[in-house]
Image (cartoon, rainbow, N blue to C red; front, side, top):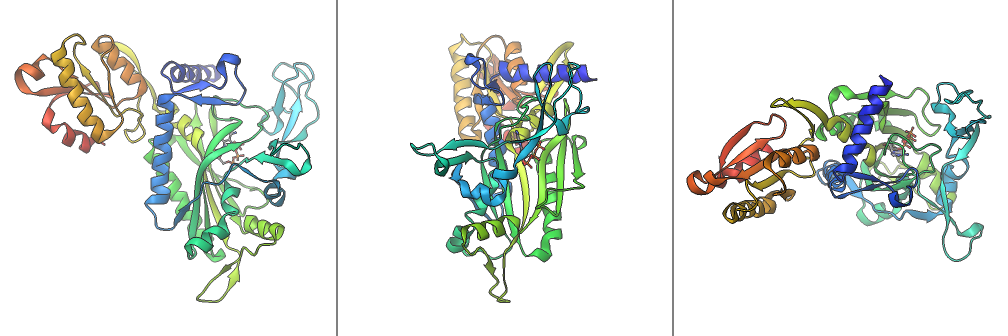
Length: 435
Ligand code: ATP
């Protein structure tokens, strides 16, 4: 089983590199552990996921305020929240092979895979420290943020003062986060630099249960929207949540390397705003104008990893089957996330009459659907294989009949390989129904 899943991951990683989705970070210099670079198609996939998230959780709602806070923040932010002292994982080293491990993730924390004995476990702080300005002293210390959340909490007062929202309302942010993970692993799953999509939803304390339930459902809907298979998504109630949380659910996903955390949903009480209020000396309480009650809002936090979303989508899309007696690999992306929606081909590359017509169709479809690709490389079979591997749902071919006979093109469906003739003038309507 382990071998099979390792092999599946190897195949996925290899396709991601071959087709330009994801590359090892700093590859030509031998890499930098825990960093990954997205190529053109991986970036398109990632942007589709981020844009869909922003639409679902921000623009389609009336109660969300977007924030794009600086990654570098005053070190007092992280002192106030306890990250400087406490954002750590247990670390141990094998005395024989010198490899380092996160002990809470080991089946046997006393013995290494190589047979060697493990050292005592100690706490390792995962904050990536840096200095801001020319002086490298204590006052110039800053950290690359380990989560996007605090960038929102510290802007709570700005949002209240600028937009005067009434409770309940949320702040939302998409952005990079950095953690000096002890053992980055499983492709992009555990990286040192990654992206998050987070919401800090502020409420009156007595409505926490219904808000938690609302976001639990919204998060499950989201996994369906991006095309994750229902049977691969699990809810895991955390029995002993972090000290600041009254309830936490992890949404786990069945990755080929095992079931692991995809997203988290936490009721963070008034912990963060209270800490920032105390540490900054700025009053971060909310005044309910109706009841004249003053209090620090409580917070429900749905937290999504962008890279883990991309990885889950890739793992679930990766499909092998037999088509027309031939083995093939294809990415069964939901059309909403597919990096390329339609590819247009002239049957032959050296027949200007076909190329011209195909170019015309391509540019019309591109205006309407955006992610449309023109492809005239190699024979038609090769083009289908290439488009299958990057998960393009539909291919349109212009042939001699198009020109000489019926003004129709062949539209081929990625999943079934079935083909149908569609009038050029009907293509827009045809694809509007599909997407
Ligand atoms: P884990 O237990 O896997 O270390 P966590 O519980 O520390 O994760 P959170 O602090 O809840 O994670 O972060 C919120 C989300 O950010 C996670 O659900 C995940 O999607 C993403 N995330 C966290 N750490 C990483 C990482 N090292 N690489 C990629 N994504 C990450």
